[in-house]
Image (cartoon, rainbow, N blue to C red; front, side):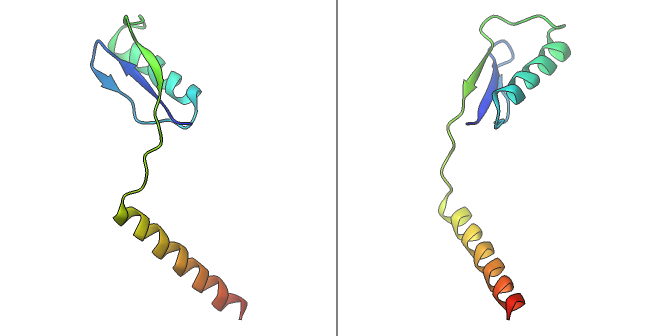
Length: 77
């Protein structure tokens, strides 16, 4: 499950991290760099739902998988 760090003071949110610990570490680094280690009011770790692939992204993934399958079959023959 992806998570993000949010800082309401800076109005930022981190990139998604696959673990809560990753987002928490991002928050620690952000606090050290921009807030002198202090916790801004309202900062939090939020769940970031996984977005679905768009049509072009899905097509690219399918093409790569198909090419890998063809290469595997050719190697076995």
